[in-house]
Amino acid sequence: MNNGFEKNWISILGGVFLFTGMLYFFKLAIDEGWLPPAARVAVGLIVGITALFIGYSRYKRKLTLTAELVSGLGSAIVYATIAYASFSEDIQWSANALFISMIAFTSVVTIVGVKYNMRWLSVISIIGGLITPIVIKAPEQQIFVLFLYVFILNAVSLYLSTAKSWPELRVLPFVVTCIIYITYYVYFDPESWQQPIFYISSLFVVYFIGLLISALREGNSFDGLNLYLGLINAINFIFWSIFILNTFSVPYSVPTLFVGSLYIISSLFIYNRDQGSKLAWGAHFLLGIILVSIAGADLASNYRYAGMHYAINSAIWLTLAVTVYWAGRYTKLIVAEYIAMIAWLLILLQWYTVAWDVHWVRWFGVEYIPFLNPGALVWIGLAAAGFAFAREFQRRATSKDAADENAGVIALALAIASHIVVGGLLTIQIQNFWDAYNVTFIKDYIVLSISWVIYAMVLFLWGSSTDQKPFRWMGSVVLILTSIKVFVIDLAGASTIYIVSFLMLMGLITLAISRIDHNWRKKKLQEAIENNELNQNR
View (tube, rainbow, N blue to C red):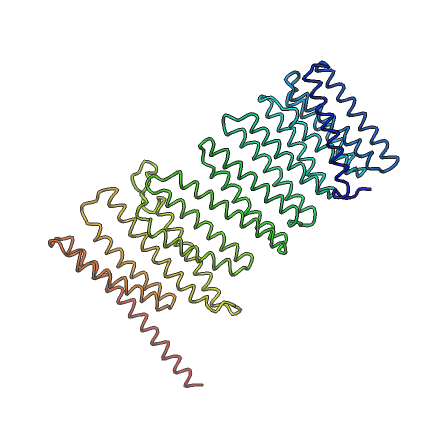
């Protein structure tokens, strides 16, 4: 008897028209004052329960669609009566009265629908109950009661849809609820953003959780209708968030960022449950990335003071790049890792062009704290991500079962770029410190030269410890360029004790670099001799 919606939609539509006609007749009776308020509620409950009982009795004797439709029509009339008692200015039940009556009657309809497999009873009753608020508009002071009523029906419809595999109870209530929300927004024209955001957020959460549970109960069925409704649910929420918050000149970045992060997390959850659902977890992940990037753009546009929008934008894009990289590694999708590294490189290049315009921020009453300011945190994040990428590719290059022949070259390039980031971090922190505290006892360009030579020594140490010549070459380049700067620029002034001390320190550091280089060469020569002797013995 319980054929699909596509075979019975005309009968269902007829029932909906019949219910809507009765609903408008009921509204006309209210407008014309044909019955007192209490009598309207009594008549509605009597008619609804009678139709429900007649249909239920006929259905038990013979499984017919007509009996189900009569039962569904009766339950829809009961819902309409409850809605009238709650929303009408003549009665206005309290939220507690609505909640108790809705839970009680909905429990009866749910038990009957599940136990006797009365599919269209459930469909007609829930859709009829949702149509009622569109016809009988709730007064503004009853908005909370209105959405409490609506969300109870949506929660029940999701439960029935999951328990009995009735897909129409996922689609139709969602569509009708969206229409109710549009009607509410246009009719009441809210004067603040808090209420409309709260209600659209509640709708989003109900369907996000409901669809996820539905997919799990159906054997990890994350594709198909669950995926489609999940994406529509997110798009609907984001549209209303941007529309409402823009109307009231409020940044929409917070809800957008929340939903984007939620969909990224859910994509990993879906992948963990069913790796075969590539479309589902891929669509969730892509939507999450898009939403986070939109949120970042909005967030950055609201904080342009002192170049903070540059730091916010770069931080968010860096977070996205790292997320894509680790998602690619987790799903063993090599192309995602390469996309993340290219994104990291582009972020690095863009950051080098704007980082000098990002000023520091006073925290804890202190004018400037080196390495603990927005710009420095972006530098540190870029360097940490770059070194992490380099380490992973270096591990892949030395692995016996490595399939990526270019992993070693990529690791080296990433490590060199990350060291350049560290150099930029040191430079800008020193400059900012001198500007913030107006240091005069020693020039900032002298301190920069010292720090760069020390950094050159670090590069030599890194090259020696990892046995990689490119870092020694890079350290040599830094040392040569810094030496040119010292003799051409730094020594242009008059001779002072500071210049003498500076040159002595530079000399000691350079000798230390020479010693490191000498030990490295000696080590390589010894290894070559030992390898040669070993080959001769063979």
